Image (cartoon, rainbow, N blue to C red; front, side, top):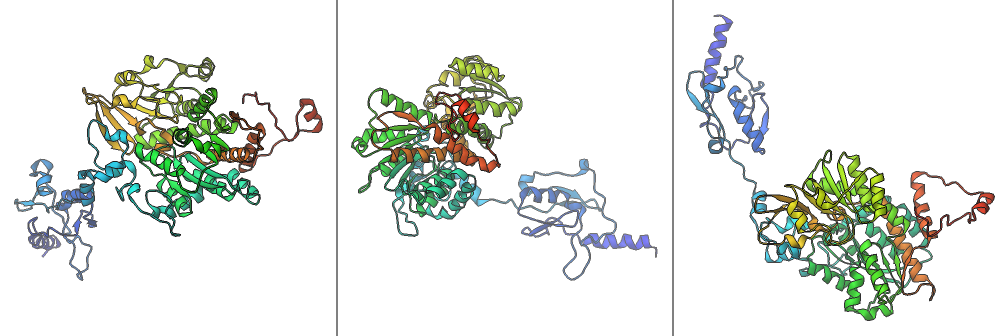
Amino acid sequence: MSVQVVAAKMAEVELKDVPTGKDLPAESPVTPTSEGKNLPRNDPHEAGSAAAVSPTAEPSAKAGEGGTGLLTPNPVKMPQASSMKRSDPQQNGGEAFVNRDGTVAEAPRMKKIQFADQKQEFNKRPSKIGRRSLSRSISQSSTDSYSSAASYTDSSDDETSPRDKQQKNSKGNGDFCIKNIKQADFGRREIEIAEQEMPALMALRKRAQGEKPLAGAKIVGCTHITAQTAVLMETLSALGAQCRWAACNIYSTQNEVAAALAEGGFSVFAWKGESEDDFWWCIDRCVNVEGWQPNMILDDGGDLTHWIYKKYPSMFKKIKGIVEESVTGVHRLYQLSKAGKLCVPAMNVNDSVTKQKFDNLYCCRESILDGLKRTTDVMFGGKQVVVCGYGEVGKGCCAALKAMGSIVYVTEIDPICALQACMDGFRLVKLTEVIRQVDIVITCTGNKNVVVRENLDRMKNGCIVCNMGHSNTEIDVASLRTPELTWERVRSQVDHVIWPDGKRIVLLAEGRLLNLSCSTVPTFVLSITATTQALALIELYNAPEGRYKQDVYLLPKKMDEYVASLHLPTFDAHLTELSDEQAKYLGLNKNGPFKPNYYRY
C-alpha cells in the first residue's frame, strides 16, 4: 500500500472523530486556534476571531498522547467564503462551515461574557448621599444623564459625603474632613516626589528651621491642595506655624495628598468634587474653631478673606496680615483698600516678579496642553484657537499652542499687551469676528462674562471651551442651565452641552481653572511661588509695628532675587559677580537688589 493511500485513510479516520459544534463543551476554558495555540476565553473579541478560524484546526492531542496538537498531515481545504453559510454572531457566537463530506456543521458556540462591574457602573444612579457630593451647578442641569457620581467626583470607592463620615488618623485625631484617610500612604509618596522638585522651599526649611521665624503663627490657608501645597504647609509647620487649610477650588484637591496631611496632624477640610455648599462649609470649619484663632491668612482667590470679612470681622483685630497670590484675590484687596475697608496689611504675591514671570508664564505654557490632552485627546496641529487675554497666562498659552502648530488668535483690551501679541506673530481680533470658526476658546483674563451666551450660541459644533483664569466667572456657564439645552457627561470634568438642533460644545471643568482641575502643573515652577509665599508670611509676621500700614504691598525686590537665587543651583548655574568698580559705576550694592522697583522684566 502506497504512502499516499495510507495518508488518505488516516485523514478519513481522523475526520470521523472531529466533533461538531454541538458536541463541543460550551464552557471550554480555551478555544483552539489555527496555529495550535490555546486562547483564553476572557476576551470576547479574541474569542470571536478564534471561532472564525477554528474550522481549519484539528483538535489538540489528548493528555499523555504526545503530539503537537495538529494531528492531520493533510488538513481539510477551506471552502470559499461565498459557499459558507454565515449566521448572526449575536445569536450563536460563530459561523457555520462545510465538512469534507458536504455536510454543514456549526462552529463552536461562544458564550457571551457579561462584565458585571461595567453593567453595574453604567446602570446605577447616584444615591441621595452621593448626589450631595456633586456640585450644585450640576444638580441644576437640565437632565439627570450622569451614570454615576463617582466618575465625576473621583469617589468611585465610596459615594458617601465626607461630611457624613467620622474619620480619625492613626493618632486618634479627627480634626479634619477629607475623602478617605486610608489613602495617606499614597499621598505621602506624592509629597516626597514633589519635594525633589522644590529645592528652594526645602532649602528654606533647612536654613530657617532652627530659628523658627513663624513660631506662634496661626495660619489659615485657602489654596489648591496638591502635593506642592503640602510641601509648603509642612515647611510652614517646620518653621513654627500652626496651619488649618481648605481648598480654593472644588475640583483641584488631590484626595490622597489631603489624606497624607490629615495623617500628619494637619487640620485639612477639602476633597475633590465638593459642592458649593461644601466649599463654604470647609472654609468655615477652618476659621470657626473653639480655642483657636488665626493671626495670618494665606489666600488664593480671596474667598477666605471674603468669608472672614462677612462672618467673623472681629478676627481682624488679631490678624497681622494677608498674603494673596491670584489676580482675582489681589483685585479684591485693592478694591477693599480703595474703599478704606482693608484693616490689615496685605502682600500682593501675584505681581511679584517670581510669581508673575514664572508661575503665570512658564506654568501655563506647559499645563494648558496637558489639561486639553487629558480631557479631550485633541490634536493641536492646524486647529484654530482664540485666547482671550494676553497677560502672562495668555502669553504662555499662546506660545505653547503656536509651537504645536495651532492657528492662534488673541483678544485683548490693553493696547500694550495687544501690541505684544501682534509683535509675537498673533492676529489680534474681537471674539465675535472668529467665534464661528475657531475650534478651541480659552479665557485667561481674570474678568467676568468674557464668553457669554451669545458667543456660545454661535460656536461651531464640537468647539472646546475652557478657562485658564482663577475664577469661574469668565465663561457664563449659568446661561447654559436652561431647559432647552441638554447636558451630557462625557468623562470626569468634561461635559457636552447640546443645543436643540444637535449642535454641541465641549465644556471643560464647568468653566473653572483647567490645569489644576483637569491635570497637574509643573512642580518646579510652583516651588518658586511657594517659596515667595513663605517669605511673604515671614516678612509680614515678623515686621515691626508701623512698617506696613493697612494697604496692599509688593514683596521687596531683594526677596524676589533671593527666591530666584535659591533655584539656580538646580541648573548648575553660576552668577557673574560685579567688581567694586562696576558696582560703583552702576550705583548698586554688589549683593543687590540689582533692579529698581519700577523695572519691567
